Length: 158
Image (cartoon, helix red, strand yellow):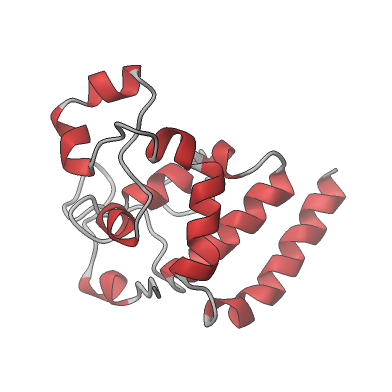
């Protein structure tokens, strides 16, 4: 199992630079989001991020997260105003400031470790090399605020 995971990760590292230029929301990201996230983030009654923040307890109890079914919904969770929320939830625990702990939604990216790693590689390629970070718009604790340079690395091709 460990050898398969290492082999799969090596293939992803080799393929990622080629894949990065071609990854788009419509062709690559939307199908992943629909397959793995829609049950809780696109269900009838799923709130916008603004609605979710007004009453998180209510939506968490109903197992309904902020909407992710449009390009605009994801930009809100990646760039602004909920900067980095997408990355913090889906990170595999290897990013700086993760403390080695995967995000609470990483497990939802697939049934197996290789499947999760593959889907995460697509999402990271879409976000852009150097754009995947856990920072917020303003500093919190030991995590600094998002910098202009980090923001400029976001690609998010439609």
